[in-house]
Image (cartoon, rainbow, N blue to C red; front, side, top):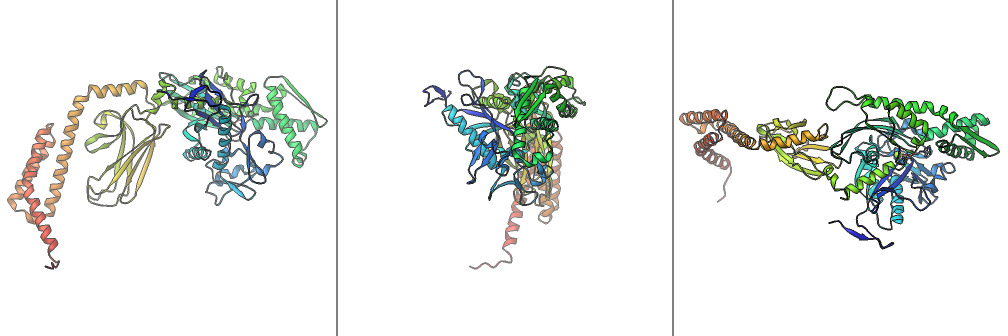
Length: 627
Ligand code: ADP
Ligand code: MG
């Protein structure tokens, strides 16, 4: 049953659990929801205001942060205390940034070159997580003000190329801002969702997402199948965006008005003024053919034609990136690369894709019209809202994303599949199980990961294999190896093996859904049903054989250690029964194996007792018993 709440401000009914979608951008950030009545993705904004919140934090002399348009005003007048592009710092060390150190007008510092950066403002230090949390807190407050309800749960987007540390940093920022971050999703995935792509389960598509924002350019190639998005490849330039288009206009005007680089350096008012007017000109030229304004007794004018000529090299660069990305995509099955023709859909993202010349260049390169009907600076947040709505359970058809379609497990003795995560398990999920070594002094343990429903791993799909090395030598069965499976919300499986006594550990990451189609999943399920009976027979046989092998090994070991306890006839008789068991192991009869196991057990039991007595009396020798 859905939970219903009452909005105390308006008295209207609403869903109790409002999960918002957040685009935490380099230049601009915003919040979107699925409108409870219209069911349409909607960007949140105050009446007559923009939905975009500049991702800028300004600190006043007391260290109080102000976020958004208010902070943007200080960009040029108080650069040391005005932090822009904090997203570029997420999960980065100074070492990572040093090539672009000149980009930042505020103080980016580090303790040593490999630790994560901090930003120094006056005598205070902020981590990129702190800075992002200020932006998220502002977004949360705005959303609460507009919705008149507490906002505590969110889906936040990140670039597809963000690594685990950067994703975790984004999660942490959310937490600091008082948000429960239910999921981190890729920006291109969100943009596709906003266009309704991937919402139909049977849809198979290859999508290019072209994202030209304020300071960054990303091109991502995605593949959707089974409602699962997979990033085939990403490329781009983290220092190319709308700001560069503005700069091109500023330079043009400087040339026209005879303003030098030194003049610009000398006057913040001049540089800020020119930059703001250049951005204004750029935006106007997205719809008009000319721009002109009087400023400082100068006429600043530019035609669309001139502008397009100035920015052509920049646009060409992005197209080259597109070409490279496509070339680096391999077909999931065929041994060849993807071609432009095979891209089904192109999605435009980022404010700078409003520039008509950008759209034209992109559609010319891909040879088809681009998708630009959704507002490009809102599209990522709108898609995050679509994902949030799915998580809230309002979109029942789409739950499939959250379960494992096939069982996941590892190979155990005799080639059996030991399932750790059964099919249809909810994700994210974590399961651990302990295993041990098979032979004395075993130092390596091979972990083979499989997917499927059959009892023998040879009938399932192998996903990965690795060896846990460096297990300290100890008798068979003594080592404790914990194997854990973790599937995170993005569907990535992390398999970790750890020997608990020594702490040696090894892990591997796999994408279980990679290259798996709906039909294949179905076939694997059907096979497991049609082969259920024979699989069961094979399993019991393998189990009997494994037990037989273990007993043979144990008996051999026992005899080697206790030869003096057994006389010649006993030794010969034991060898005879062992041979019979050995022979039974090669046959398909589990009952025969068990009867030979019983026989061997019965015959050797007295020896074991004898050995035990000897061990006890041996242990007592040499010790003085005080009566
Ligand atoms: P980010 O993803 O980096 O946060 P956005 O997607 O919000 O950035 O894009 C911001 C950029 O879009 C800025 O450079 C801005 O000037 C540019 N932009 C916004 N509107 C237009 C427009 N109408 N024409 C051209 N550029 C625009
Ligand atoms: Mg963006």
